[in-house]
Image 1 (tube, rainbow, N blue to C red):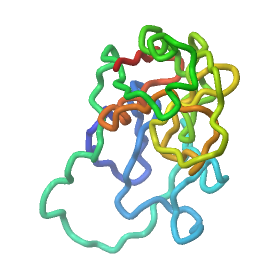
Image 2 (cartoon, helix red, strand yellow; image 1 turned 180 degrees about the vertical axis):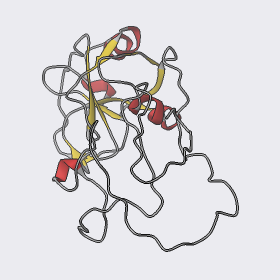
Image 3 (cartoon, rainbow, N blue to C red; image 1 turned 60 degrees about the horizontal axis):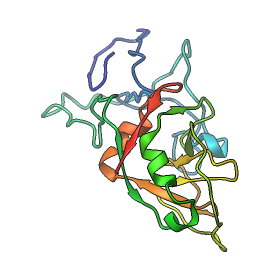
Length: 196
C-alpha cells in the first residue's frame, strides 16, 4: 500500500505498507475484533490500552452484516500530509520565548534536528543543538498539540496528539497547525528543519 490508497483485499490476505512514513493508518470495513474498553476498541498506548500493530501481526476483522456498496468513494483523509521532506516545518514563537537565551529560537530554526526513536504519539523528541534556557515557568499550565517544550537538557520535545493536558517545561515555539501532520509523519531517524 502507498499513502492515500484504498486497496480492497479478501479474507486471509496480507498487505504491506510502503515504509515512507513514521506511522500508517489502516481502516477495515467492520472494524478490528479487539476487546471493548471504555466504549471503544482503539489503542491508547500511553495508557496501556490496546496494542501496537507490528509486521507479521494477524488482525481479525469484526463481523459486519451486508450493507451494500458505498454510494460514493470515501473522502481523502482529513489532515493528510503531503510528502515534502525538504520543506521546513513552520513555527511561531511560543509563550515562553523570553525564558531562553538570546538567539535560542534562531538556533532552533537554523539547525538540523533528528527525530529520535523514543518519539511516540505523546511527543516527538528531537536531537540537535541544545536550546539554552534562562528561566522556567513558575506553574504548570495547559498545553497544545505542536508546543515545543524544552526540558533541562535543552533537547526539544514537540507535543503530539496524546500530549498531557498540562506541562511545566518552557515552550519556545509552537508548530503551525498546517504543518502538524507533516511533522508527525517524519520517520524516526530522519532530519527535520524548522522555519519562522
